Length: 277
Image (cartoon, rainbow, N blue to C red; front, top):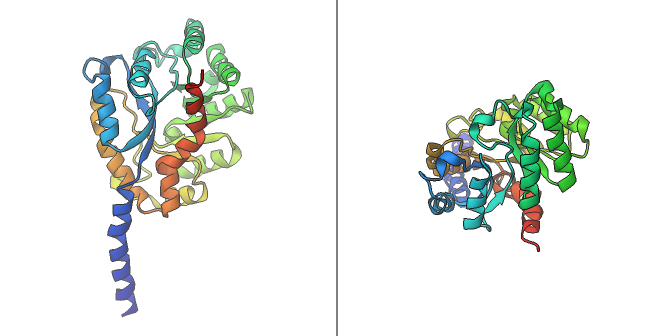
């Protein structure tokens, strides 16, 4: 009898939790608006997609940076700009050895304001190459974040270059939950976005191992879609729906932190400073 009573209470509470989660605003910490999206998806249309999806704020970078500036001009209250070093998507695999990237990034930093440099791709010992080192130096100089798509080794190397650096680790490094947990415990200035991975919540159902990490370190994660192509933009609404689904399995305060409060806490003051004269 008691067993059926408990089950009935759980079944009653689940739809209520899911209904509350459907109201959660989203801070999307991983959006791109690159050159092949501009004609297919004009800025007004892109902003409409974000708003329809319940995205309160979006951390945006692009190849080239002109895409980020287009979206920021359209909706500065929604878009938070970061500077991707790439002038075109084709530089993803070559940029770390291309020293012409340095003056490009320096010029953009003088012209515009950003909350981060990235998201950029670097792995292992390549993080110690001169071009990447200069990105770390510039992030320190401008007191902004680094958004890094990398393995754990590259993260460690960046922190050795600048122990005071602040890093957002794209896709949580596509690493296992126990490894991500260890990295977060080791580095107080490391946060993770969960973009373009599904292992933490396959088909919208929360993975128990990830649940443990989220409960232990609720202030260190953000959701993100990742839009490397124009077609991916049309998944933003579905991604937000799936995120709210698995977030509904967490305590409300933890769900709110991962959905949007962490993004606001980490980037909110930097975003506000962008608008100061």
